[in-house]
Length: 265
Image (cartoon, rainbow, N blue to C red):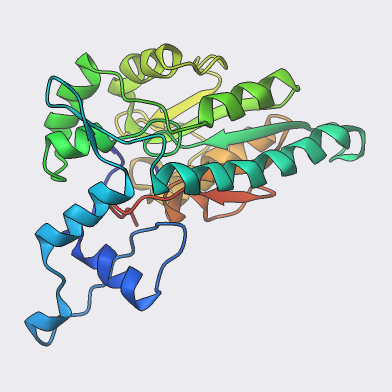
C-alpha cells in the first residue's frame, strides 16, 4: 500500500473484491478495481454479504467496548504467516550470503505501513469501510493500530541480522509523529526516524522525486526506493499490501500481503 491512509483511496464497495475472488481474478487477497459497467444486477455481489465475508476472513472479534479486531487464528493471519515464512527464508539466504551481495551495498528491506506493518481493520470497521482523511487523522491521533500479525517479529529479526529497515508510506507528512508512535508502541524496534521513515510531503516534495507533488503511488514509492538505493543500500525485499506498493523496480524481491478491504492504483 500502502494516503492520507494512502491517497487516492479507491473504495470498491467491497463487492468488486468478492467478484474478483469468485472469478479467480486476484491472488493473495488483493482487491482489484474493475471499472466495467455491470450489464445486470446479477453481476453485482450483495454488499452486505461481501462485508460479512471480509469480517469472516479476518476472524472478526468484538471486545467489551464494542471494538472490532482481527483474530490471530483467522484465515487472514494464516495467509500472512505463510507469506512471512517465505520472506524470512529469503532473508536468511541474504544474511548468509552478504559477502557475495552487491559490492559495497548494505542489505535493506522496505515496508509500507497500512495493512503491511499496521492493520487498519479496526479503523475500517469504525468508519464502515468509508475512508476519509478527516476520520483517519482523528483515529491515528488518538489510537494505535494493531500490528499485522507476525510482522514486528520478522522486521525485528531482520534488523538484528544487520538488514536495514525503511518504512515508506503514502500517509501524509503531518501524520509522522502519530505513525512513528504507533510503530514503536506495537513492538517495531527499528526506529522510524527521519532517515528511515518516508511519508508523502505534497507541500515540500523531496528533490529526488522528479514528479514532485504530482507523483502517482508507483512513482512516489519506486522513486523513494531508488533514492534509498542511491545511499548505498540494496533493497533485498519490498513489502506491501497493494500492487502499487511493489511496482516500479528497485527491489530484489517483492512480497504482497493480503488486503480485500480497498484498492489503491
